[in-house]
Length: 74
Image (tube, rainbow, N blue to C red):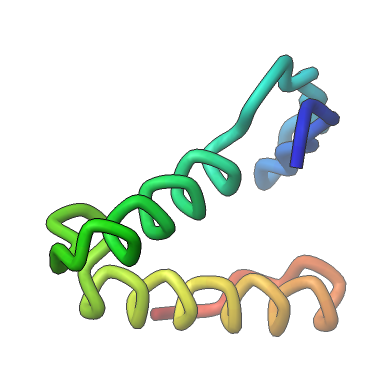
């Protein structure tokens, strides 16, 4: 994934769009993981617990989006 735009929607504020140049966090995370696999080392960054929490937040973001932006409690 290279470059692109990201849009941030905040409650009671205008949306803010930001252009991302070059490699982004997803590219960097996948590259790091691939390096760990090749070297046989356990990842120190993006531990399993962190990944679990990220998936939970993504699920809640999706739920909020499907509810027309309603705030969803963690």
